[in-house]
Image (tube, rainbow, N blue to C red):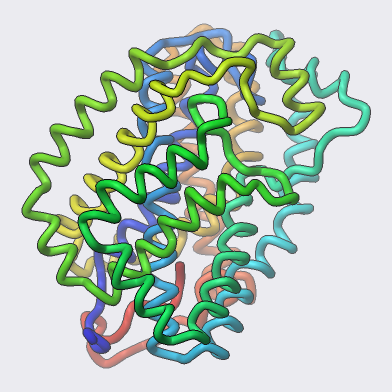
Length: 394
């Protein structure tokens, strides 16, 4: 079962999906829709950044959870259950435990410093000053928390081989992908605001289990039935047409941005349930999520399947960059709010500096250290770099 294959496109897509998170969060500062929702918003706005952020939001993390499920099945087959669960908890849960409090402390300092630097502090700063007992948040590291849980559940599922195989056989079938999966995701998100929020609280968000959990299993199924990827790639053009059409409909049915009063209630309670549910917008969102995720995955399979030292390095660095990028963006973007320069220039400056600092700090402070081993494992040196298994990362 392709035990000696190296899935370069999985490795490459993993890095791109994480770096796309930097683009997404950098764009939030300049999208008018997110004026009351983000911590480093700039007075200079352009509707282009609404579209950029919302479009990438549709498929960025769904794609990442499919990749994580793919890698989980790969590791389970390669190493067995015990070594798999030890590896996953070391790569996911321990970084979550270590980096969550550190990142939160640095972010609080960045916001405190930024409030005195920015001539026009973001509205969310005033909201947070009104919250006496804030909800505990996992911030942008929520994916590590959920992946840790999914990996444990996947490990338990593997202990029932017949059921395990039946599930992974089912999730790659057309009837599941075209009927059952859309129903699961629509039902999971039926009580959520559109665009869907991040499940960034420590208590369980059951909708995230239905949404991201299903995609995690789909990724595992695609590993065991990799021929299905080749088969579905022949439908790429049709999927792209569906994705583009659904994106237009998604923006058409998009509800108004939440008012500051609603944001205050959401921050106090941790509840993202809107006053009125528009089922049409939820269904359209589901179609857009699945079609764009499929397009992104198949595009990676078609065009990112070759080994490249530079992309491999970026893939290694992307985990670290994603862990630290939110505080970096706040440190960079809040001073930029005082400059009277075009909004696109501010966006490029913030994005470029964040990625550059991330790569430099990774190269000199992380890559060959204990932190680098924790995040990406020890660097193997096979005789033939283009052969062997995918490095055990997700």
